[in-house]
Image 1 (cartoon, helix red, strand yellow):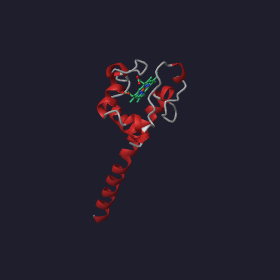
Image 2: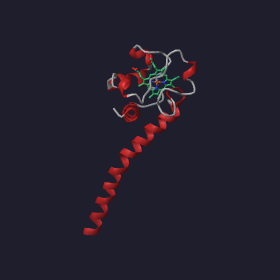
Image 3: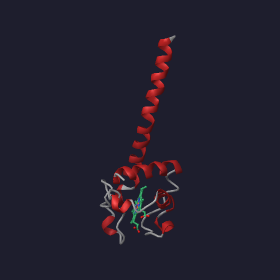
Length: 116
Ligand code: HEC
């Protein structure tokens, strides 16, 4: 009996450990899929499309730049696009592709990139 409950406990514990990792991976995957082209593979704004944009994509690795933005601002910029936060329309809206939960995870992922 004791063995069984120990096993159940360790499975639950494993589940708790795996969940945040899975989320982090998903935001990273979404970033690679949708953001790399402009924000770059390192997130520093040096994507393949950056040269042809008249406004440089945000450098997500810059703590100085990213600290100026609130989480709400970042969330709205991703969900509704640059125009919604009075920024460049080159930053597209992602609301038809990413769910609110995925955008929230993305905000966390960006904090990881700038370490801020
Ligand atoms: C077609 C190019 C392009 C793609 C793709 C793109 N962005 Fe952007 N993004 C931009 C540009 C350009 C800016 C700078 C806007 C400005 O400063 O006026 C920007 C700015 C931002 C900002 C800062 C907004 C602010 O208020 O300063 C965030 C956050 C952001 N992008 C997140 C993302 C995320 C997350 C993705 C992927 C889901 C993404 N971007 C995909 C071009 C792009």
